[in-house]
Length: 413
Image 1 (cartoon, rainbow, N blue to C red):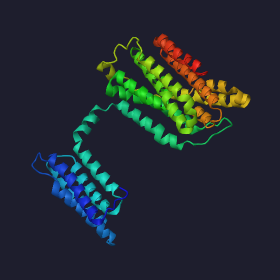
Image 2: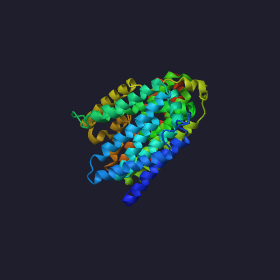
Image 3: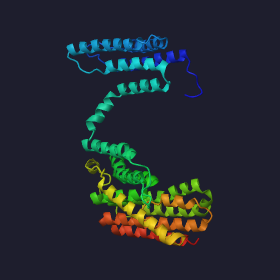
Image 4: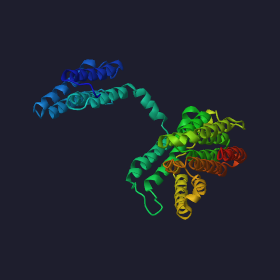
């Protein structure tokens, strides 16, 4: 809360308010009232918070033992209350832990930045008040989903930070960037799974395509193909998911180019918007809808799609194509720009396009190279989906084929 001075009296009032908030929740929820006895209510929690504030004040005037003695005294009272409950055959010590945290909040209102006690006090109250919803969530929690979340955290929060963010070999292979590709391909289907469980098969896949297209439409095409491969009855919805993500790609590229080189946007904007519109029309176009896209039984039996093996395969292909791209630059130079664009288009094209638009001196040539890369990328995504979803090859080939061919006249306009 910059620009606002939290004076001593305001901090004291905040300590009172946060303690009162927790006490109000405990008393209004009827905690421990089955026996007509309440461990602590509005007055007690407010006093505990003020007690913490007073101990912090004593600490600031060099009574250093005030804080540990104050904490131990509150802990002793909480222990007495807990033992009394045990003798009566009751279990649970949520109220006692909340009392300890309320003391800490009272201390922190004086000693730290104000957002710390405020966050602790509010979150503490929310957790106490949402007991029923939290217990219901735990009862519904699927173990395989929980393990999938843990695997996702391992690959993102543990492995990714440990990798060197440096380029190696003459081909500039960056382990961090490659692992980001692994995470991206793995997480697209993972997010789609939870969206589908939440919103239903058709709406979930469409949201996944829309959100995934903002990041990588190529990854979405692979993930959608995997969905169609595992559950053929949902293949048409998966195809629409892939088409929608590919439509978003043109808008994403337009924004990226505008940020880096606004001069190029003047030549490119209407072409990207036209191609995005074509993609949306192909997405909404007729076809045989999936037979069970709205049945809850099918949604309930969906298999968790967090798989690393396909992601590693995609990462390996990405590395090979990076090497091929560097080799093409070395042997053909600027004369091989269009051929290079077509090669790079097989994978995600954002890094390549951003490297192109840094040089805005040859605007028309750069726009043509971008269109070639986008056409190649469209053909590649159609190929990925066709290989994975064999029962939708006809629908996939004509949609992606027509879409790719429409890039050709735009090269010369």
